[in-house]
Image (cartoon, helix red, strand yellow):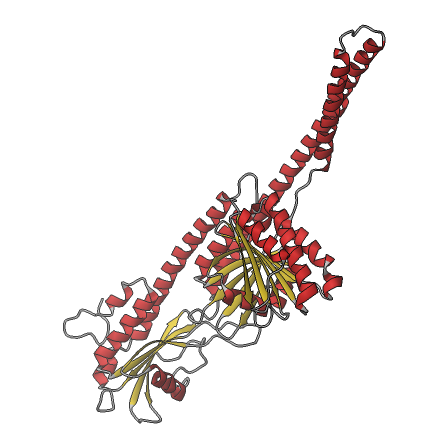
Length: 512
């Protein structure tokens, strides 16, 4: 196949474009071919992002992918001067011409505009600056007459290939979520796989699965960079997360440095959470492919979580029924037989048949056995799962009248499933002492309590905006006791100034 304008060799270097399956490489190769054929002294290759509306009404913006012969600032200025000249319509509409010859209003030099159209959407915009003499040769221009069309076909092929690869990857990520659901059907691992999958599908900076509890956000699982940037971003979009969980509507919010995209889970039985992604400047908003892939992935994960919750409830129901059966058998069978044996022994003792006193000893042992079995029956009937999160919330409400406000409680990671009962009891003692100190000494107007499980460690943070701790102040017995409790479990206690206020961090290894 020979394209118009080919050199005498009859072999078109445009074929090199359609043989590539990477979009950026296709565009960069097309730009280089266009510049070489026209002997252009510079070029500006702009990627036109798909228009995407966020909650502020701001649409996606074009970005310079490649600039040669001039700086990025000069490239932006040139694009601003030319506007949509030669495109015959707004970005997103198919231009009427494949190539336009324009004049730069400032320099007067000629500029070739080569639109790259994929489907009916302007995907990229190539500007070629005239050679030093200020104009292009007609034969050179004719040699790239079909450059835009060929590049559009190559980009479409590359996009189709990339989408096929992404779909295959998303299926593998969904399968990983499926495999994570196994006895005892805890949600910690499936939620972590969900966060990791969302991170990879959208190439995000951070992906977390959050749940709104008492109008505050708890991070149930996370992947990527879970740092103070994430905490600050979640604080700024709390209202959007609450609305998404209640209404089931996604949101897109552009902050100063990042874009936050939230997609609610759609469960029937599992907890109603929201998948929140933090996108950096290089990824200003989700594309149509991002939305298609992530929405399908999240729907699948919602079904998997529903299955896990139902299996968990079934397991609890079986366990509860088994507890009831054991309690009935102990009460109606074993205890009654022990009673009958004790009565027979007592009757024999009273009739004088037991001359060595063995009967009295047997009666006492039977009585002890009855008490032990009754205790077991009571524990079986009373047994119920505990929740550190609920205990902390109850403690926060207990101190609300003393503090004059309700402390904010947040959890990061699978706190309830991974923190053992003994450690939970220690944590509530530590929190009670910390809240008591805030009430008696800090004079705070806000207290934040954070629970976190990460890398095998459990951490409890208590942050207040009170007067802080003086450098000359001697720690009291309460803080010494908290430090001793942490050391006894292989952990530590750390106090830092929060300007204003104080941050108390009590950290212990879960394995301890």
